[in-house]
Amino acid sequence: MNGFSIKTKVNALTGFCLVVALTGTLVLLWWMQVNLERDQAVLTSYMRQMELARVQQLNFKKQVQEWKNVLLRGHSARDFEQYHDSFLKQESLVQENGRALSGSLTQPPIRAKADEFLKAHEELGRRYRSAW
Image 1 (cartoon, rainbow, N blue to C red):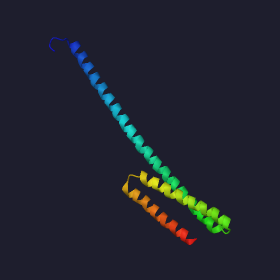
Image 2 (image 1 turned 90 degrees about the vertical axis):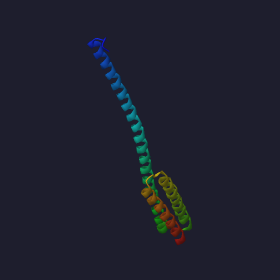
Image 3 (image 1 turned 90 degrees about the horizontal axis):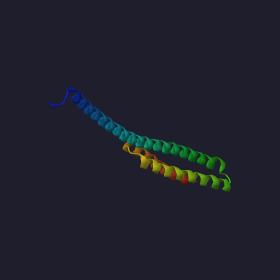
Image 4 (image 1 turned 30 degrees about the horizontal axis):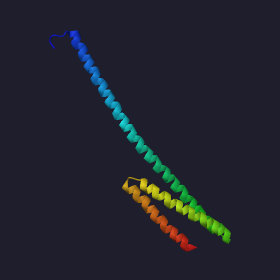
């Protein structure tokens, strides 16, 4: 290195620093992209769980309304059959959606609550049917 002028040494050092800075920048950009993709996957999963929970709540509400219809409007055989079928359809949707929601949950305490709801819902269904 003694044979090079100061200008050459400064230019070489500047070039080396630029290569290191560029390499560091590219590595950081790559790392940001990896984190962005991971965060996007987590957010997508969370949004799906939220949507399943919202649909679960809506289906259960509709099932309760169908039970009310059976009780209040199901006096004739035709009406009873109509409301009874709607009730059973909603019960099936609640169970199906509940299993999908429970399967998508990764946190054990939350999954346990979803499973607990499904078991209570099954028991409630048995009690509804025994009341007919």
